[in-house]
Amino acid sequence: MKTRTLVYLLALACLVASCRKKEATKAEKRGQQVELSKDAAVFKADKDFDLSTIKTKDFYFGEVGDNSYFIIIEHTEHNRVSGRYYPVVKGSNKLTAHKFEVEHKNSEYLFCTPDNDIPIEFEISMDADHVVGWYKPANFGREKEHLTFEKYHDPDFRISESKRYAPDCPSDLLTFTKKADVVYGKAKGYWTSKPIQHEKMGKTVVQSILKTASARKKEQNLTLDLYLPNDTAVKQRPIIVLFHGGAFLVGDKAAPTSTTWCEHFASIGYVTASVNYRLGFKLSKEAIQECGYEAIQDANAALRFLLTHAEEYGIDTNNFFIGGTSAGSITALGSVYMTDRKHPGFVDELGLKEKVGGFEASGNNCKRKPKIKAIANMWGAVYDLDELDGHNIPVISFHGTDDNLVPYDQGFPFSELKSKIGERLYDKMYGSKAIHERLDSLNVLNRFYPIAEAKHAPYEDHSGKPNATYFFIQNKLQSFFYKILCKGKSIEHDKKDPRIYRLPAKDVAWSNWQIEGGFIVGQEGNTVTVLWRSDAPKRILTAAGECQNGVPFQCKISQ
Image (cartoon, rainbow, N blue to C red):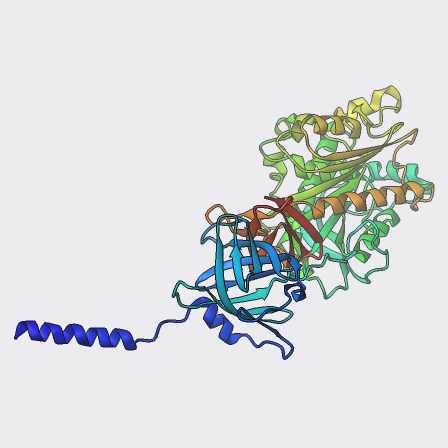
């Protein structure tokens, strides 16, 4: 009885198995979804047809059964076609080429590889973009293998045509809005603005020094002027922050040499800021040192303020550029290189940190200071070249070789004054030539443009207006900053999945990809899946696009 029951159960199992529908392969499923064009050609193995009518040298991707392949037909004749096929191996990014031929010979079709010639039966339909059908080895009793292929198309690829920020950017690309007298902090000082009247420069300096002799410091509003591009296409723009010159006694953010640069760079896409800072000192070395220290405090306060209000003003927080002329350049350099831990000896000797606060402890309560992308040094100087060590910030410098106020190489400011007054009132300083040489020794990117036989501030005429040297400097700044902006984008190869490549930067607005020697088989955001042909002479992946700040980029990686 038990034996009979077991027989019945086995018979029932066989009946169910014979009735179960075989699951369709990947190729069969895809083939069912393909709609061929009305003029699709049909090729059957039981008919003699001209194989040379297959006119294609494109790559196709698809399946034979459940296995994926790339295939290309490279040569056709009346009775023969030849090409290569590339099996896709799961988890691998390498495609190994295999040669094949299909030949019509003695009333049958043969699928030929270097090792075998196999008679085949097939029925294939083909239009401009698809190959759908089946094949099976003849005389082997095997079931049909479905095949479905689709022409491989490279992704659309374009390079950004944006001229924003570029050296050849039209100077009227954008309009801008000036936001004047923005208060970025408060601090005690003599004054923060004393516009220069060049025809009365000497008299103004003397009057300023005399004024401080009996004056006391009072709380001052620290202000800056902002120039904001009227540009709705880009919401985060790099910023250039400029500090005017004037020997820490005179000067103003609205000087023609400051406003012209701010207006120009705003018109090509940057946010720009011209900053006033505390000026004035009593006539002593210690007072001058304290004045320079306070200027750096103010520069740091301005930078912190701008970072804190970056969203409000549409500032790209990753791209802060800073620069200045003369005392403004000394201030800009000091704000980058001086800290409460690393500073000239006079800071501790005078107890300035205890007296007026640390470098970051004045002006406002904004906490964070931005990282500086690059520095524009125009006839400025540093107190100690060792300040530059440990920093990898690009610098572009300009300096007149005959500067008689701030040393071109090294020395004391105002060295031409009688009775060695410069040596008595100022510390020894290191000018642009010395800065350039130290940066070169540290392998820090920098450019130095000596202005032959020029004295101090060679960028303005006798009335304080921009001259030809001014626009030479402007062009060099524009090119240097643009190169810095465009640096840094790279393609990352995934360590776990060799097929994956990505743009790791978070500030990419849009990207597209181009490949030579392989195939892009998937893309999600700024990530692509790539398969490389083993027989390709070159294997190069290129990404191009724009950052959120509107800077175009293009980068490559070779396999």
